[in-house]
Length: 503
Image (cartoon, rainbow, N blue to C red):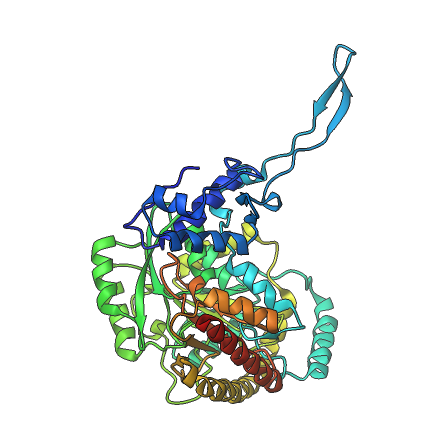
């Protein structure tokens, strides 16, 4: 077993050990049943503290990569290794019967390296939120309590009947023309001037980022983005072949002083910023920083991608104009999603940008997609036209504000345990600091086993160099009663975690 430690790497040493052992297991260098060095032996070999090895082996055991056996020590688990196929008799060309071994395709070796996840990913964790037997405090999904289902059903029936006049399963590659016209008016309420030809309809923010990265990012290009940052965001850029460099955030969002220094040093291809009620911290970028980002973009001629899905969910204070409203040079690519303020399960986003970029984006859509979701586009267009959406938006604000109050009151009750948080003035997330010494991964597993789903903070750090003592709490989806119950379970899980640490 060959393990090399890079002491200059920001990734903790124990995680370097974990990742390298996983890689060797997947490649077959460490087949099932292989014995690993003892904790003390590996510590001596790598010149590190034994506790670091203990931590690494515990991590591998928790995900079933290895197991421990009495009198043997640590061995590679058979659950993580390919089993050889059975031998089957076949006739050779000579007519003689011979035994040929059936061989499986080594899919781990065939799949592109960048698409192989070496540790439990955001997707694995997100799947937990589909378990209705548990209280979901992690998934950023719109509330199901706002829209009247009977009215929606009638409206869909109307659209289907009216749609028989045209090929309603298909829509233009830029998106439904009527919807784009209504989005021009919607953008006007946000201070953004755009024509229908400068709008591209897509299904969600992730798809928009993937397509934008396909158009703009070449292998080896540098992309600057905030840290912490949504895993879907940085993965889209990494899979496009970019080198992701991160800019820290404070209570006012992205640190623009550090941003400009990084722009000078790294000469990035683009800058990504989540300007309003940032995921996961809930921070909002003040006006002076928005102006500074535009100044940097214009001076260094660098595109800015602005994600703005939560900007309408303001509960206190003024609603700030998007960075796009300050863009007089056409350097900002603006992404807005209705994922937090429309029917859950009906996903729709759009991009506003320079006409040349939108033209190329539409071409890419024509190659990748047969059609965007006709029904969702027609329904949203109808609701923007007759005012239903704007009424629903007010209802979402009231609903989310009341739920945020519930979460904050419960967290206030946990402050004596060592919990700390900042209350955002909008959005749907609370970035919560756990008591000193409590690891978020261990804690969320305990909470999940007790009945509540949460997201650990480390998944929001591309280089896995932070967030181990934070969790992200979401309050948009569950009812108020279920939020209360879920937060009570979270408290009990935290008390158990702290009690266990004292033993």
